[in-house]
Amino acid sequence: MDAQSITRTSGSIGRTRLVQPRRGRRAAAPSAAAYTSRVIALRWLASALFIAAIPVFLLLSNVRIATMEPRVYGYGFSTYGVAEVTGLDRAQLDRAAVDIVRYFADDRPLLTTRVSIGGQEQPLFTAREALHMRDVKGLFQAVFWLQEVAFVYLAVYVVAVYIWARERPLRRLARQCMTAGYVTAGVLAVGAVIAAIGFDSLFLAFHLVSFANDFWALDPLHDRLIQMFPRDFWFIVTLAVGVATVMEGMLLSLLGYALRSWLDRTAVVVSPPPPSAAPPDAPDASNALLADEATAEPTAAEAP
Image (tube, rainbow, N blue to C red; front, top):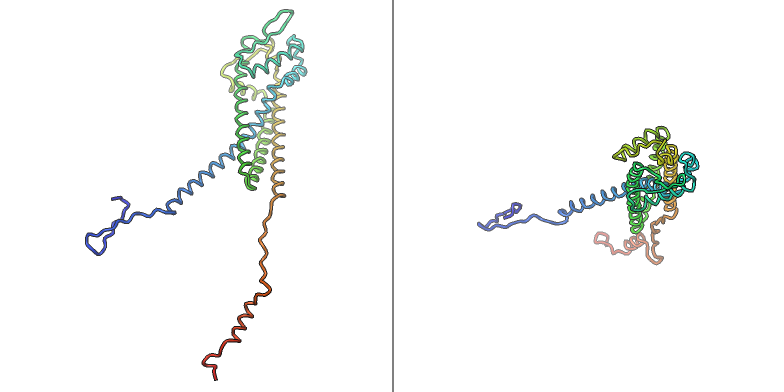
Protein backbone atom coordinates (compact mmCIF):
# COMPACT_ATOMS: atom_id res chain seq x y z
CA MET A 1 0.00 0.00 0.00
CA ASP A 2 1.22 3.47 -0.87
CA ALA A 3 2.17 5.65 2.08
CA GLN A 4 -0.01 8.43 0.72
CA SER A 5 -3.05 6.17 0.39
CA ILE A 6 -5.84 6.66 2.86
CA THR A 7 -7.73 3.68 4.23
CA ARG A 8 -11.34 4.25 5.09
CA THR A 9 -13.49 1.61 6.85
CA SER A 10 -17.18 1.51 6.02
CA GLY A 11 -20.01 0.22 8.24
CA SER A 12 -19.42 -3.40 7.21
CA ILE A 13 -16.57 -5.14 8.93
CA GLY A 14 -13.62 -5.90 6.75
CA ARG A 15 -14.69 -3.71 3.87
CA THR A 16 -12.07 -1.09 3.14
CA ARG A 17 -11.59 1.38 0.33
CA LEU A 18 -8.33 2.93 -0.78
CA VAL A 19 -8.54 6.61 -1.65
CA GLN A 20 -5.65 7.78 -3.84
CA PRO A 21 -4.55 11.45 -3.73
CA ARG A 22 -6.08 13.50 -6.46
CA ARG A 23 -3.84 14.64 -9.28
CA GLY A 24 -5.16 17.35 -11.49
CA ARG A 25 -4.62 20.88 -12.51
CA ARG A 26 -3.53 21.99 -9.06
CA ALA A 27 -0.66 19.50 -9.09
CA ALA A 28 0.47 20.76 -12.50
CA ALA A 29 0.32 24.40 -11.46
CA PRO A 30 3.74 24.49 -9.70
CA SER A 31 5.49 23.00 -12.74
CA ALA A 32 3.87 25.58 -15.02
CA ALA A 33 4.95 28.37 -12.67
CA ALA A 34 8.50 26.99 -12.58
CA TYR A 35 8.57 26.83 -16.37
CA THR A 36 7.40 30.44 -16.59
CA SER A 37 10.08 31.50 -14.11
CA ARG A 38 12.77 29.77 -16.15
CA VAL A 39 11.56 31.43 -19.35
CA ILE A 40 11.62 34.85 -17.69
CA ALA A 41 15.11 34.22 -16.32
CA LEU A 42 16.42 33.12 -19.72
CA ARG A 43 14.83 36.13 -21.39
CA TRP A 44 16.44 38.44 -18.84
CA LEU A 45 19.83 36.75 -19.33
CA ALA A 46 19.56 37.03 -23.12
CA SER A 47 18.69 40.72 -22.85
CA ALA A 48 21.58 41.38 -20.47
CA LEU A 49 24.02 39.60 -22.78
CA PHE A 50 22.69 41.62 -25.72
CA ILE A 51 23.29 44.90 -23.90
CA ALA A 52 26.78 43.78 -22.81
CA ALA A 53 27.73 42.44 -26.25
CA ILE A 54 27.09 45.75 -28.00
CA PRO A 55 29.93 47.78 -26.40
CA VAL A 56 32.24 44.76 -26.71
CA PHE A 57 31.46 44.44 -30.41
CA LEU A 58 31.79 48.17 -31.13
CA LEU A 59 35.08 48.54 -29.24
CA LEU A 60 36.71 45.44 -30.67
CA SER A 61 35.52 46.29 -34.18
CA ASN A 62 37.31 49.63 -33.95
CA VAL A 63 40.40 47.89 -32.59
CA ARG A 64 40.28 45.49 -35.52
CA ILE A 65 39.94 48.30 -38.04
CA ALA A 66 42.89 50.17 -36.55
CA THR A 67 44.97 46.99 -36.47
CA MET A 68 44.25 45.79 -40.00
CA GLU A 69 44.40 49.16 -41.79
CA PRO A 70 47.89 49.99 -43.19
CA ARG A 71 46.92 53.64 -43.54
CA VAL A 72 46.79 53.90 -39.75
CA TYR A 73 50.43 52.83 -39.68
CA GLY A 74 51.21 55.25 -42.49
CA TYR A 75 49.73 58.07 -40.43
CA GLY A 76 52.18 57.25 -37.66
CA PHE A 77 55.10 57.08 -40.07
CA SER A 78 54.31 60.57 -41.37
CA THR A 79 53.45 62.16 -38.04
CA TYR A 80 56.40 60.95 -35.99
CA GLY A 81 59.20 61.06 -38.56
CA VAL A 82 59.76 57.31 -38.56
CA ALA A 83 61.82 57.40 -41.77
CA GLU A 84 64.40 59.67 -40.16
CA VAL A 85 64.50 57.67 -36.92
CA THR A 86 64.83 54.22 -38.52
CA GLY A 87 66.88 55.17 -41.58
CA LEU A 88 64.33 53.46 -43.84
CA ASP A 89 62.64 55.20 -46.74
CA ARG A 90 58.87 55.56 -46.78
CA ALA A 91 58.35 52.90 -49.44
CA GLN A 92 60.02 50.25 -47.29
CA LEU A 93 58.04 51.36 -44.26
CA ASP A 94 54.77 51.06 -46.18
CA ARG A 95 55.71 47.58 -47.37
CA ALA A 96 56.56 46.63 -43.80
CA ALA A 97 53.14 47.89 -42.65
CA VAL A 98 51.38 45.76 -45.26
CA ASP A 99 53.43 42.73 -44.24
CA ILE A 100 52.53 43.25 -40.58
CA VAL A 101 48.83 43.37 -41.45
CA ARG A 102 49.17 40.17 -43.48
CA TYR A 103 51.08 38.54 -40.64
CA PHE A 104 48.16 39.12 -38.27
CA ALA A 105 45.86 37.31 -40.72
CA ASP A 106 48.04 34.41 -41.93
CA ASP A 107 49.55 31.38 -40.20
CA ARG A 108 53.21 32.38 -40.14
CA PRO A 109 54.71 31.68 -36.71
CA LEU A 110 57.15 34.60 -36.86
CA LEU A 111 57.28 37.91 -38.69
CA THR A 112 60.12 37.75 -41.23
CA THR A 113 59.94 41.15 -42.90
CA ARG A 114 63.18 42.08 -44.68
CA VAL A 115 64.43 45.51 -45.73
CA SER A 116 67.40 46.90 -47.59
CA ILE A 117 69.79 49.08 -45.59
CA GLY A 118 72.97 50.36 -47.21
CA GLY A 119 72.43 48.03 -50.13
CA GLN A 120 72.29 44.98 -47.90
CA GLU A 121 69.10 43.03 -47.23
CA GLN A 122 68.49 42.17 -43.60
CA PRO A 123 65.63 41.36 -41.23
CA LEU A 124 63.64 44.39 -40.15
CA PHE A 125 63.20 43.12 -36.60
CA THR A 126 65.47 41.35 -34.15
CA ALA A 127 64.65 37.93 -32.71
CA ARG A 128 63.31 39.56 -29.54
CA GLU A 129 61.05 41.85 -31.55
CA ALA A 130 59.83 38.93 -33.67
CA LEU A 131 58.94 36.97 -30.54
CA HIS A 132 57.02 39.94 -29.18
CA MET A 133 55.13 40.27 -32.47
CA ARG A 134 54.21 36.59 -32.14
CA ASP A 135 52.64 37.37 -28.78
CA VAL A 136 50.90 40.42 -30.24
CA LYS A 137 49.50 38.29 -33.04
CA GLY A 138 48.06 35.80 -30.57
CA LEU A 139 46.46 38.63 -28.60
CA PHE A 140 44.91 40.19 -31.69
CA GLN A 141 43.59 36.85 -32.90
CA ALA A 142 41.85 36.39 -29.55
CA VAL A 143 40.40 39.90 -29.88
CA PHE A 144 39.17 39.18 -33.40
CA TRP A 145 37.58 35.91 -32.27
CA LEU A 146 35.74 37.64 -29.42
CA GLN A 147 34.54 40.35 -31.79
CA GLU A 148 33.15 37.71 -34.15
CA VAL A 149 31.40 35.87 -31.31
CA ALA A 150 29.78 39.13 -30.17
CA PHE A 151 28.64 39.84 -33.73
CA VAL A 152 27.09 36.37 -34.13
CA TYR A 153 25.21 36.70 -30.84
CA LEU A 154 23.90 40.16 -31.72
CA ALA A 155 22.77 38.98 -35.15
CA VAL A 156 21.01 35.89 -33.77
CA TYR A 157 19.30 37.95 -31.06
CA VAL A 158 18.03 40.60 -33.47
CA VAL A 159 16.83 38.01 -36.00
CA ALA A 160 15.05 36.06 -33.26
CA VAL A 161 13.27 39.19 -32.07
CA TYR A 162 12.33 40.07 -35.65
CA ILE A 163 10.99 36.58 -36.45
CA TRP A 164 8.79 36.52 -33.38
CA ALA A 165 8.20 40.24 -33.67
CA ARG A 166 5.23 41.81 -32.06
CA GLU A 167 4.95 45.40 -30.99
CA ARG A 168 6.11 44.65 -27.46
CA PRO A 169 9.34 42.77 -28.41
CA LEU A 170 10.28 45.52 -30.87
CA ARG A 171 9.75 48.12 -28.17
CA ARG A 172 11.93 46.07 -25.86
CA LEU A 173 14.62 45.87 -28.55
CA ALA A 174 14.51 49.64 -29.03
CA ARG A 175 14.84 50.18 -25.29
CA GLN A 176 17.75 47.74 -25.10
CA CYS A 177 19.54 49.53 -27.95
CA MET A 178 19.14 52.82 -26.12
CA THR A 179 20.48 51.31 -22.90
CA ALA A 180 23.42 49.66 -24.66
CA GLY A 181 24.24 52.94 -26.39
CA TYR A 182 24.23 54.79 -23.08
CA VAL A 183 26.43 52.13 -21.47
CA THR A 184 28.86 52.18 -24.39
CA ALA A 185 29.15 55.96 -24.47
CA GLY A 186 29.44 56.24 -20.70
CA VAL A 187 32.01 53.51 -20.13
CA LEU A 188 34.19 54.46 -23.09
CA ALA A 189 34.02 58.16 -22.22
CA VAL A 190 35.31 57.37 -18.74
CA GLY A 191 37.98 55.12 -20.25
CA ALA A 192 39.06 57.84 -22.67
CA VAL A 193 39.42 60.33 -19.81
CA ILE A 194 41.48 57.84 -17.80
CA ALA A 195 43.68 57.13 -20.82
CA ALA A 196 44.20 60.83 -21.44
CA ILE A 197 45.19 61.48 -17.83
CA GLY A 198 47.32 58.43 -17.05
CA PHE A 199 48.13 56.78 -20.36
CA ASP A 200 51.66 55.73 -19.41
CA SER A 201 50.49 53.81 -16.34
CA LEU A 202 47.60 52.30 -18.29
CA PHE A 203 49.90 51.28 -21.15
CA LEU A 204 52.34 49.62 -18.75
CA ALA A 205 49.54 47.79 -16.93
CA PHE A 206 48.18 46.56 -20.27
CA HIS A 207 51.52 44.98 -21.18
CA LEU A 208 51.98 43.43 -17.75
CA VAL A 209 48.53 41.83 -17.89
CA SER A 210 48.50 40.82 -21.56
CA PHE A 211 51.97 39.27 -21.91
CA ALA A 212 53.61 36.56 -19.83
CA ASN A 213 57.16 37.68 -20.72
CA ASP A 214 59.16 40.88 -21.07
CA PHE A 215 59.78 40.76 -24.82
CA TRP A 216 57.77 43.97 -25.04
CA ALA A 217 60.43 45.87 -23.08
CA LEU A 218 62.36 47.24 -26.08
CA ASP A 219 65.06 49.86 -26.48
CA PRO A 220 63.90 52.90 -28.50
CA LEU A 221 67.50 53.64 -29.46
CA HIS A 222 68.10 50.32 -31.20
CA ASP A 223 64.85 48.38 -31.73
CA ARG A 224 62.99 49.34 -34.89
CA LEU A 225 59.63 48.07 -33.68
CA ILE A 226 59.35 50.72 -31.00
CA GLN A 227 60.87 53.28 -33.38
CA MET A 228 58.15 52.56 -35.93
CA PHE A 229 55.38 52.62 -33.32
CA PRO A 230 56.35 55.03 -30.55
CA ARG A 231 54.38 55.77 -27.42
CA ASP A 232 52.62 58.82 -28.88
CA PHE A 233 51.33 56.74 -31.79
CA TRP A 234 49.58 54.35 -29.41
CA PHE A 235 48.23 57.25 -27.40
CA ILE A 236 46.55 58.79 -30.47
CA VAL A 237 45.24 55.43 -31.69
CA THR A 238 43.80 54.62 -28.26
CA LEU A 239 42.00 57.96 -28.06
CA ALA A 240 40.72 57.59 -31.63
CA VAL A 241 39.32 54.13 -30.90
CA GLY A 242 37.68 55.38 -27.71
CA VAL A 243 36.14 58.46 -29.31
CA ALA A 244 34.86 56.45 -32.28
CA THR A 245 33.24 53.92 -29.94
CA VAL A 246 31.59 56.68 -27.88
CA MET A 247 30.15 58.24 -31.03
CA GLU A 248 28.86 54.86 -32.21
CA GLY A 249 27.20 54.31 -28.83
CA MET A 250 25.46 57.67 -29.06
CA LEU A 251 24.33 56.89 -32.60
CA LEU A 252 22.93 53.56 -31.44
CA SER A 253 20.95 55.31 -28.72
CA LEU A 254 19.50 57.69 -31.29
CA LEU A 255 18.54 54.76 -33.52
CA GLY A 256 16.82 53.05 -30.60
CA TYR A 257 14.93 56.23 -29.80
CA ALA A 258 13.92 56.61 -33.45
CA LEU A 259 12.63 53.03 -33.52
CA ARG A 260 10.58 53.55 -30.40
CA SER A 261 9.14 56.81 -31.75
CA TRP A 262 8.25 55.09 -35.02
CA LEU A 263 6.46 52.33 -33.12
CA ASP A 264 4.52 54.96 -31.17
CA ARG A 265 3.42 56.69 -34.36
CA THR A 266 2.41 53.51 -36.16
CA ALA A 267 0.70 51.85 -33.20
CA VAL A 268 -2.89 50.83 -34.02
CA VAL A 269 -5.32 51.89 -31.30
CA VAL A 270 -8.32 49.53 -31.16
CA SER A 271 -11.37 51.41 -29.85
CA PRO A 272 -14.34 49.52 -28.39
CA PRO A 273 -17.33 49.20 -30.71
CA PRO A 274 -20.21 51.66 -30.12
CA PRO A 275 -23.26 50.33 -28.28
CA SER A 276 -25.72 48.83 -30.73
CA ALA A 277 -29.02 50.73 -31.05
CA ALA A 278 -32.27 48.90 -30.53
CA PRO A 279 -34.19 48.03 -33.71
CA PRO A 280 -36.83 50.64 -34.59
CA ASP A 281 -39.64 48.13 -34.49
CA ALA A 282 -38.68 46.71 -31.11
CA PRO A 283 -41.04 47.87 -28.36
CA ASP A 284 -39.61 49.67 -25.39
CA ALA A 285 -39.38 47.47 -22.31
CA SER A 286 -41.07 50.00 -20.00
CA ASN A 287 -43.94 50.61 -22.41
CA ALA A 288 -44.45 46.87 -22.81
CA LEU A 289 -44.67 46.48 -19.03
CA LEU A 290 -47.31 49.21 -18.74
CA ALA A 291 -49.31 47.66 -21.54
CA ASP A 292 -49.27 44.30 -19.80
CA GLU A 293 -50.52 45.85 -16.56
CA ALA A 294 -53.34 47.70 -18.34
CA THR A 295 -54.61 44.63 -20.14
CA ALA A 296 -54.31 42.29 -17.20
CA GLU A 297 -57.59 40.73 -15.94
CA PRO A 298 -58.85 42.03 -12.57
CA THR A 299 -58.12 39.91 -9.55
CA ALA A 300 -60.72 38.39 -7.30
CA ALA A 301 -60.52 41.31 -4.88
CA GLU A 302 -61.15 43.82 -7.63
CA ALA A 303 -64.06 41.94 -9.22
CA PRO A 304 -67.53 43.51 -8.59
